[in-house]
Length: 126
Image (cartoon, rainbow, N blue to C red):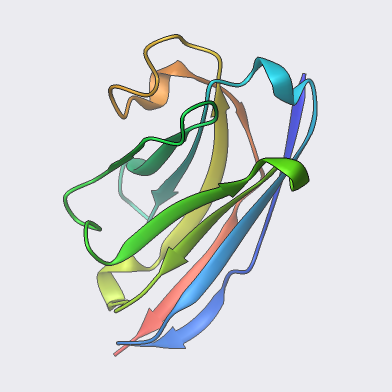
């Protein structure tokens, strides 16, 4: 089992920045990828970004490329999501997730993620 706890959400004006953190505990060695997803009210869950825990390769959704950066600190078992140039369309609950699927680093696929955090709310006002 892997436990995930997100933090860092909040309210910000358009154009601002936030950094989300996800602290992992438990059998973290089994995770091949860590990722961030988001879900806005009335919308389906959207993949945001993923990072391979071994090699550090990353994937991003087109909607956040060049604005968001996912990174990790393996010594702290923590994954980060730096979000810049935020706009109201980024408003959502953001979830951290961990995957053991061997292909998780090649495709952003939420179905492959076994463990999920409780989420942290991000609200961007215009």
